Image (cartoon, rainbow, N blue to C red):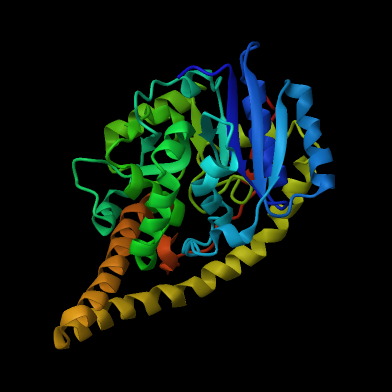
Length: 375
């Protein structure tokens, strides 16, 4: 399917407008002259003032844009994401086929990304007869058994994906997704991502690693990491700051953060982004100090479920085992990523399992990164 116009759908809140501007800037700075871009911004609270400020990015290239006001009632049946750093606006992505009824094919992105080359190559990727295309997730494979996805398939990250919306509508995938929400609701960790994987795993087209390079998340498969990082360092593809360590929060301790800041410095939002980061440092440190309590609490919950399940049977036993296994999966994933995030010092786990083991990094290196000359 070849479309002249590239439709790009992005969920965002008013608070995230400065970071949305950085993403749009990176897309426009790297587009081909003939690229035609149409941005569709889904939001509950973006203001007219936000829209005016976002017009600044037009100095980097031409595009069309629309803002779609979302209704929270549309996702009231979707569980809240258990990872504190993921906005529930992401759940609206499950409704894009009915929201954008005239769009045949769309690229969906999230705000915590940077694009380093023209999106045309990605947008024109051959999807065959599939309705969904995404990049394999580097570390969430263990989640597959929770959602009954056979091991011969791969769980994908859905911060970025391609969607054949004609097929979504034709095969009624939106209804299937909400049926899966009812079935797996209590098990969902990353609601939209888990549901996309469960719904589309049989026909997902796996995209090249360079189109979703994780900056601060450990890769289970070293060959995939080498492929992804090589392209990112060569200025190709898309970088996804997928963990809690966003470049606008951890400039000195976030892989590829200097690339993000090189785009941020070109905008009038730059000073606001810096101001927010410095104000948030104390709050983040307090959060890490208190998170040790949450980790210990959840470890105790795991052993409690394991113990109690020995004395019950039937549906009650199954329910306890499901809860225990969910926490177990999060602990395993967290242990695998602790070294990558903090060198063994500390980590915030998915699903609210948090471990603290060191002071929040804070040093003068932040200034050299944020104030480096844009290139």
